[in-house]
Length: 233
Length: 282
Image 1 (cartoon, each protein chain N blue to C red):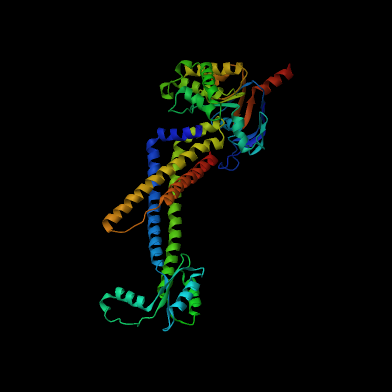
Image 2: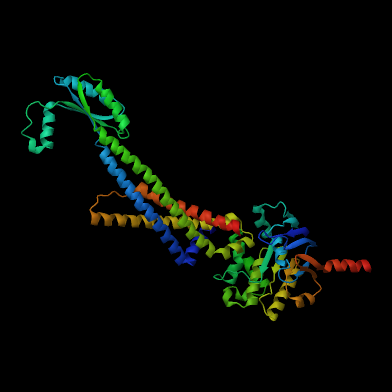
């Protein structure tokens, strides 16, 4: 479903030799839950940007859902993104619109028939536990609630994978646990989740696959470890 | 439909920025309009002067009126000629008396020659064409002398050419400035909504979909700015008339419409450039 093949990414204005990613290869299966960890600047966000084709690899190949970074056309990128759900640390909500308008926005701009929008929006808000606050503006919501609106927006198009870049980075412990619980539920319903995070406590509390990056290279992948364990057995 | 609604919503969401854009567009088009008005009035004034271009062929004494009428019939068939008036000796005297009132007693009898007064069609009043007509008229053997104000016709045309070239150059410069200013104001609108644009891209909106409301917004601002500029230009003209006692002409309905459409066009172009650049950058 997702495959990175010896991917190297050098940003155009980076110092010579300073690659954001260096020879990174991995696969993610359908419905998998994967943590991306590592210190700041390790390349987590770059991997996510490559996934939603906001960036293209300098060399190597990213494949996702039948699209290939090598030959995807600019006009096909929106089609790919309609099948992804993306959330960020800073929520990225429109401040002048209510929770439900923020979610509906994601449907409107891809030309969803207006009649089917309210139903989908209310289902998504219910899924994230915010049905009662659908008319609230972002500033009237707590950080955790704002992030839930962002999740509802990401889920409203039934993505096959949810890409989350430090989704709990701005939240307190309680809100973090709530969001993480939500992510597990989303994953349990069959959506793959790729979550970049600094929160090692969260990572250790589960046995989901973890890919750890440092200086643009994979230094640890629990899936590889499992393979080794199997071989030893 | 959604694009139109989004474009109108942009006016509602940031009325101040929209007002600023419309005013900026209006003033840059106002400068263009004032210039256009000056150009239009110069053109009109030159046209009025041009209408007075006339070839007068004086005939020798003893030419009969029949000969004169036959010749004038022939001349009036030239493609360049609008009208030929036959002026007899008596009529010439009458005219001279009227034009030079204080000398009216000096003129007596048949001292002034009869003539054919030839008016040319518009578009055939340039020095070269006038001279061609003159040469043909000279071929009648009873034509004594042909006068056509050679000196001032060529002066007039020189002036007209200079005005034309200067007009085009200045017009282009003003239009260029207007496009740049409008592009900048639309760019502000684009930047003010860059967050919205980035979210649209994340959830899979196409570039065309993102672009459309901005193009509509730009055109609406262009039309509003153009309309406001037209009003300002009209007021400025009335002010000039009142205080400087100029007799001026204003744009007719067709030119006014062209002006407003021009506003819409540069609004559209300005937005297309701004949003295109933004979409390429992010």
